[in-house]
Length: 337
Image 1 (tube, helix red, strand yellow):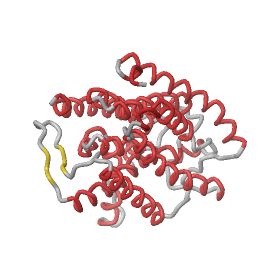
Image 2 (cartoon, one colour):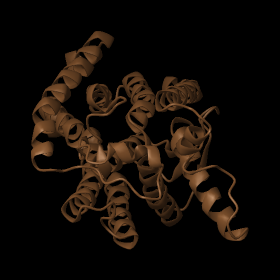
Image 3 (cartoon, one colour):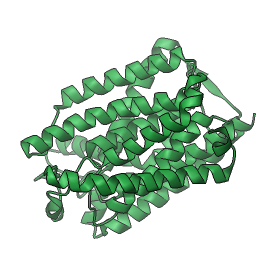
């Protein structure tokens, strides 16, 4: 695997393998989900024009989760045995969140409604996963209790370990759920995460973190393969299975590279989507029924303004890409030190 990831060509081959494998798994998975009647239930309080998507197979995130697992374990085995387990830990972290999402999706499918796990259970399970991840990364020396600030000459803010651990756990839970909120249009969450995956491929390659480069490249190829079926009009949705896994993957990479604050840049769309939801609910309660946005989260607001789904996805993906480019230049100096 070393030769595969020592060159740009090798990384591109890895991305291509991930893409092809995801497309192949998708070919097998979609008919199975249809036969099991694992269709998405659309919320009645959501956009009325989305009701036509009722019954579209969900849990499609399984296709890129399987691909990433195969490549991370298969290609990364020599590094795992040698003690370089960063990519494996990030995958396992994301997998735990994906499992929580799978339980949620399964309950929705079984009960034929859009409610699965209660908010309390979701939070408890996610917080537990986040705490375990921070403890593991600290034990394996992937974390230091310093918050690196992008666009500085390697300036970091030191924190006491207990405070840093609390910070890390809640950032992880918040980031994972922010990705979940973004998953509201055909191809949106997967498309805006593609530039994020490219960013982590670039910085981990530059830093020589081979095990994380493999994970990031597999993630990139898996998302592109998933978009073959998830672009508008979607043949399948990733479900909470996929969106919570994606959130765990992005967040895990940020912490495994020891730069959690970079999530503010690479996760700009996730943050805007979540803030729009928080602002809308808060303002609605304070004003007894008034709204700032026509509908929240933000992607629905633009739909209500007359934007087509394709336009929302394209614009949001472009914004994500621009902020990921900015993030790269914000941290590249750190990797060259």
